[in-house]
Image (cartoon, rainbow, N blue to C red; front, side, top):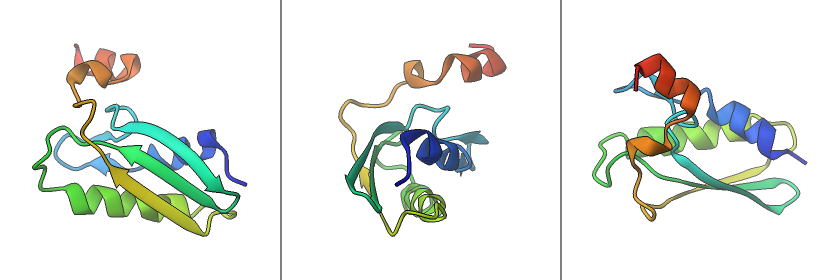
Length: 99
C-alpha cells in the first residue's frame, strides 16, 4: 500500500507551467486518502476556479500517482472550498519567492 509521503513525493513532481512551481509547494493538495489498499483519492484545488490548466494538472497528478507500484486506481477531486490563497504556499517556497 502506498503512503501519504510517497504520494506527496510524486505530486511534488507536477509543475504548474505558468508558475514553474510544484502543486504541493503551492498548497494545492488539500487531502490524500486511501479508500482501498490499491487506491488513492486526492482532493486538490487550483489558484482560480477558471484555471485553463485544470485538465493538464489533474491528469498529471493522476499519472504520477499511478506510477506507484501498489496503486491501481487514482482519483483526483477538484475542490474550491476553502478557496486557495497565497498563504497556502509552503514556507520554503515563500522564501524562494521572497514573500
